[in-house]
Length: 436
Image (cartoon, rainbow, N blue to C red):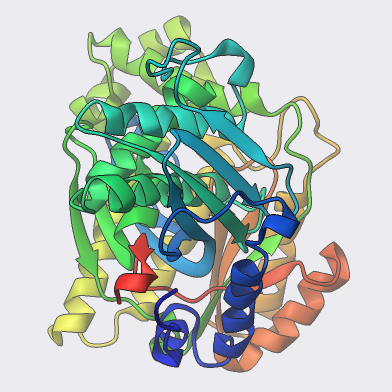
């Protein structure tokens, strides 16, 4: 790097209490980029990139049916120290994972940017898919990267989206002038995950990572979602925002995840529509007897969840805006009520708290039940809900700051040391730090 990153950069991204630790993390990545460590000779200036994980604040399983969500980027991120190379070849090392090498040229010298069956489910697939999208609109080249991620895997904090958006930001900045908007980077990342990686997903995770801060996103037009940033700091309202990792296994849950959008869309197609957002709840309820016969009871219940959760996401965003404008007074109690309503709906209607194929593994149910008992026993105003896809992984909780350490201690009694992670909403999305 031509210049060392200033302390203010680390304080902005991670908070003053973590700035020194993160600065050392970056320094170790730079120090590790030597030929002795297996890196090719440097081909240009070393540059630094970061893309955050994200937390879902509202809108559990609404984005894939053109619904609305409230999400925010967090201080946990994927970071890469990068230099460009002449060859159309990507060398990507990430701490704790095998090296990834992707040749972007075919054997005859032409581009090799088509999906490969043997790469599905790998980082190689993501690199190739993202490169393919950039190559459609300009020249691209290769790079070497030394990376690390602090986004907890299997936590619903979108470690995969952070990685995808990070790679997209690198290609854009190195070879196409860094002109892509945050939503463009998100769409490129989503397509790589859908087509090359082989995993269907909505756009919420990538959009939240790319844009930064808290954002209300409307997917009424999936090809052109509308994003509105909202300034939100739970700490300023006296609450610690955290996730509790129940450490349940995500193995064999693909069918459970896929069934949610599938069943919602079965209900939509009952009316000749593609997404539930094109309908309204009263219409669905009026046809409930026929829907039960055609799609089953669970599909109907999940559709009811969608309509109410879509509304709740919009209400949460409106409450935050009203509070910040000074027109609504202190709206946090109302906000927390909606968070709890969302949690109830996911548990009762969406039914993504545990897999029906493994009823003995109900870590999320235990975490929610214990959290509620904690709130009640201490007489505190707080909230909890499932976080992310569900079935295993994490719950999200808002805890009054003064009660947080006790809550953390109690939850870690159940789920182990380090199970509770406090989150900080980060205002910067995907960014090249060497340009700051």
